[in-house]
Image (cartoon, rainbow, N blue to C red; front, side):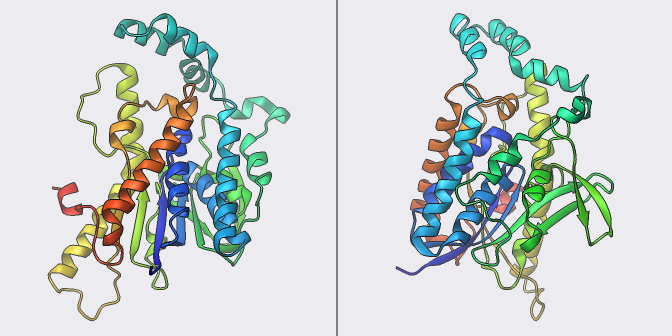
Length: 349
């Protein structure tokens, strides 16, 4: 069986990144698929770090197994905070009426956290501040980042000073770069990194604000045409949001999809020019776009569970991601190297 090389683009979305955990695990178990490059933002950068470090640690099956070990470790650590007994008790007492559901939203730890972040800053903790993600990354079974072996790895962060995207690559990809990509400013302090490009120490916030994930690094001539995007934030939501929580959730999704949609629109424009024969003789890549997603599941979740996942949610997301990747391989693997698996023109019609 011939090996097909792909680029993997991993969206951010907090604890919902467990969906990508499952999808990546399934792709790693497919011998006919080789991951040539990874672009990740926020939770996608965490998943990408686990994947890239594992694949860089050894060749062949050993590298794939190492990547799976890294992913399992990261999400085992995240799961330790997901068994929220308060939310479980409230939903068991008031399981169905919408009014009670609204009440549990108001009194859940998610609501408390959102309220506190409007009053307190992560800088208020003084010398006691620490970012728990740092220890998780450094204690992965295979923690080395920025190695020349393995897939190319691109990590997106948002420069606080300029508001522009900063893509770390190669030896620039350190634990701090991944932390910068996953830095929600209401929860974590900005991650400061000395940047030789600007000659100054720059502060960075979550990469999802400026590229979720960034696709343009994957256009390089030495990389394959196929870009497989693992979607966490639903593109479509047919039900009109009406409650305060529903409205805020949809604002969150729209904001974190904006940069990706902008890049997809540009790709669609290039495809149109290619189709019209107007790029003959010009060096402009025509990437092939594919998506692994489960909008039905994601439409049932809220932005709140990105921060505080409900009990048992992470395994559900992991299994859903695994199943979505299985469906992609079953129905769309034949498109790799040949054609898109999604209709971009219809997406923007």
